[in-house]
Length: 361
Ligand code: UDP
Image 1 (spheres, rainbow, N blue to C red):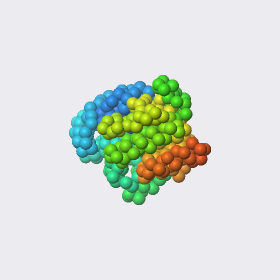
Image 2 (image 1 turned 60 degrees about the vertical axis):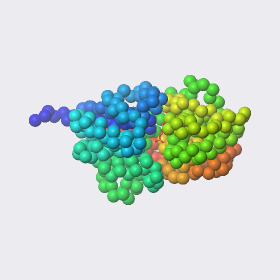
Image 3 (image 1 turned 120 degrees about the vertical axis):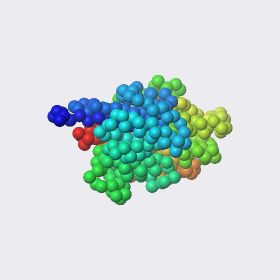
């Protein structure tokens, strides 16, 4: 018979930029726990240094114990490859619990592999729904949540969504927002001063959702609107690799007076610095809708829906859809001092990961 000390092996699976900010505080909160050992497996879904490595450095998390090196591919190819490579790892390491994060292909792949191997897994950031199944992330969320043993949610709306889908109440824990944990911890270190030629007053942009960047006409229209807006205020745009690839074939507006500053993706501390000082943020990112709400910075989301409705009902976020006239109007309103005011949702207090660690223990 084993001794009295029960040990628990927790294996975290991550793979893409927004996963790293979510895992960091959980990893840290569990590190302090006696008799917990942890392993980090990176799928390699994001592999550019500025989409992956920089976050491990800046967030102060150890390099992954293992990188599956899957790289790019179609949704099916990438998900399958992660599943194939992860299966062997899980069979060998036999973790007591796997933690998966967010809504990327890595999350779905790990959920499927764990379920078939009868390994318990918990989903961090469960229950978010855009109710838009044309979004690949929505498919990942719905399937992952059906299979998870434990579902850690960031806000009460997520609990309601899960209960409506028949997830047993006792499997759901409302813990708050882990991405905000990382923001709270690192805000004192946030700074964009290391970046060249960033105007103090600016409009900050990120775009990477298929609905905005996959259709060349739409992307061109958005870039045209941003070039127009840059006549009012400089526009800083760190371009996601997915978007960069789509932009390669487009002719960009280079008329004088255009102050659209295209950049490579920047590190977390730099991006937080840019967000904090932005007059307004224009995005289709999930995480950035939350971070701007916490920071009280006006956010205009170029989407028809959001899986994070609390950022609209309580926060500074506004859905502007896909009409560029609406974007122009909303940016002008903010610049004229008519920005939406907001407040910080409950449990977005920097302690969500502590609550996760306590629940796991
Ligand atoms: N982010 C960053 N550098 C950038 C753009 C974004 O560090 O150039 C951070 C941002 O602060 C947030 C996260 O990346 O923490 C959001 O990731 P992303 O928009 O890629 O994914 P989503 O949240 O839409 O799933």
